[in-house]
Image (cartoon, rainbow, N blue to C red):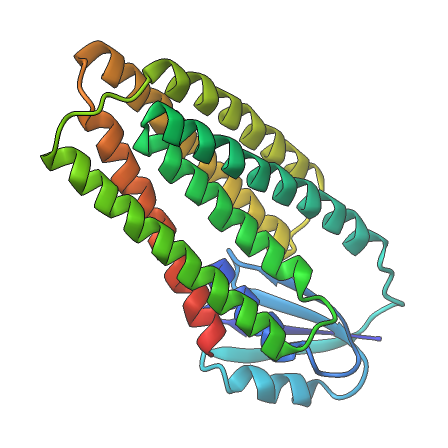
Length: 264
């Protein structure tokens, strides 16, 4: 087993990480890929010639550069299995709260909750892409990525239209009690996800990306809670529409990254 390290100058987000994983997925002999997004470093555990990996990375035009190749001990999958379990838990929590926030957001007329539910769904899509396609063909993963990306954009577009309709039309006051209570539950759920992910003490990109997503979700949940309090105090729907628009924009940004991943 060999351990080969590459510097990837333009790798700074989960989209590039997933792009690299798809590119290297069908290369025989790769046992594991470790990503350090902050340091922009890729470590590949493999058998065979590292130059095959180097060539594939070069075709992505992400500024890849070979650093070194060392002998490594036998690769054991226990760590990967533990990380997979954590990611499945995080995926389940995100998808569960997507259903909860979407339904309560519609019933309470809160665009903040609806938007946050789509952000939860977007995160679940990203986690699912990484887990679903293990051992699957690259073309299959790309098809799933395209579906996920376009679906998120469609939902966000519907959300933006609804925000505009509510802004210029008759005022529909959201139920601030539901906004606050559900967002507090979502905040607790995301904090639990964050703690579970941090306990892995892993530098693998799946875990690091998930930590970033959960940290962002904590901030978004706090924003929806604040919007709920402002709706209550001001007796006005504008704070809810503002936070909803912001989160819809975040969802679209994530969807565009997924589409970029699928089309490369």
